[in-house]
Amino acid sequence: MLTLDLARLEREGTLEFGGTIPPDATLWSGSDLSLRGPVTVSGTARFAGSGEVLVDARISGRLQQECRRCLSVVVTELELDRLLVFGDSEEIGDGGEIRPMGVEATELELGEAVREELILATDPFVLCSPDCLGLCPGCGIDQNRETCDCVLEERDPRWDALRALKSE
Image (tube, rainbow, N blue to C red):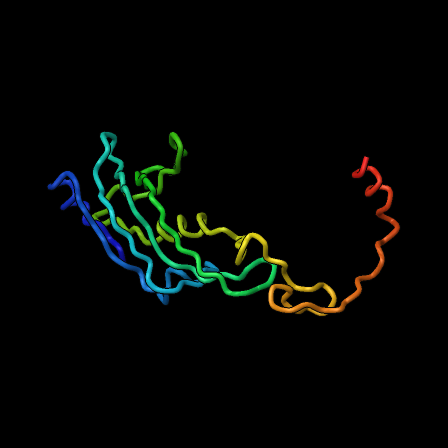
């Protein structure tokens, strides 16, 4: 997938990389991400003084999601700039996690780190527009496209005491 040769990185000091991960790669299995095209990853890698590898990565891609109110399709563009730290421990460092890298590792696989960063950056509550009206709770039509004559039931009287507190 996306691997860095650690021997080459040690020889050159800094290594530029780039590549794409296809939307049907097994890496995305179980992530609930619906990708609209490949995910592009590029950046530079270098060794830190303590033997850790610092990867300055730019991750970009397009996601297909559903509006949380009306369930219409929303395509989201993601552009992420991340500093990924790989080392031989799993301790929490200053401002981020150190991802494990075997002591005897000859290559560094970036795929799983890219997957995690993409999942964490995805907005789970996306809207098609800020003023989306959503679906009618009575008949289920999309209120952005049609209007209905539904009359919603009366308020539940058990909540009147809380409503009174809110209006005070």
